[in-house]
Image 1 (spheres, rainbow, N blue to C red):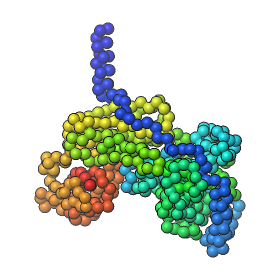
Image 2: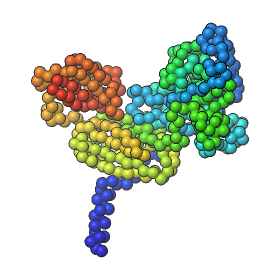
Image 3: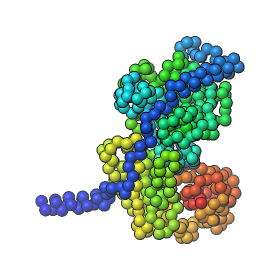
Image 4: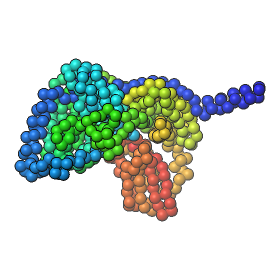
Length: 466
Ligand SMILES: [Zn+2]
């Protein structure tokens, strides 16, 4: 018995060392600054409808859209949408959005809510407005994403631009009567998709009557009009002018039960890691309209503390997330689990690693795993060790670099091609020449992997862009 107890103790200590549960040093839920105001007032919607009808008549007379709304002779087949928000190429995240509100199917008000899945992820107002669209907000960081054009609105399906509204203030934080910046698209069957609250000046340069393809740039997520924080309000009408809830579910009685408007309808709760980042200090979440200070840092000098953070969308109650921090020599510095107690549409959590724990110099690798998906983020600590370059056949100078760097082989190797990958492993540069000097002026700051192919084989290194 004693032996068994001892064994159990050893096993549990071993497990603790292998995978600690570790409290976060801070973080919590992000609540979109939601004051439950109408994304669009009835008056504004009526004016938009009038403008749309005028443009539709004009575009018909010009032959730019069909005279008959339906291309299928009165039996319209509606489009199947792609997701209308995507990440800009330069954004250092895995994903840039979460959902705050669906369409409200309960005609009563106030506080009488029912979304397509019979939940209450929607809102209504005292004045009798039941939310008429899908609200997709930016996360992590909201105004910072807007300022840096990181959340891109794209056309959900092929269509013709009917109308654009631009020139309106785009940092709304509370109820107002401002007009929004928006793009309105008519699809082949006569249905329409509306993209509202866009950033001022960010709208597509295409004009009414122009064709726009599914996935093509529409604008940047902003907070223009009656909005409390940056988000896209996505509103859809069918070919008869009826409001559509694009989701198929048990409490959407507006469309046939097997009728979704999405190519791939996303689950009601869609837990995912939006970002895994390293910071010089915890990010500051300021009050709207002050932009957050993310304090993102991917290159730490010796003696610096390192703040590692995860940003989740649809954090589920009673789940846990696993984190692993690997040192430059690939040994595990820390492997820990963190328990998530509540359900949040957006959350963030961080851990601080003091400088004295950062015992190696080079590229550290931080991986978070949640609900079966892993996201890895690399960051540089200290200087690239001299030894690391000496053991290779080549040097990269300068490193860190601002504008460009040069690859020099110690022998007569000839470069065949050079590729650069960002921290998410995505190719950001490719050169198919023997050119030794590579321009990185257009890349954002951070650590990149360099892959150099010669006749002898391929070689890898890291470059820090400053
Ligand atoms: Zn909305």
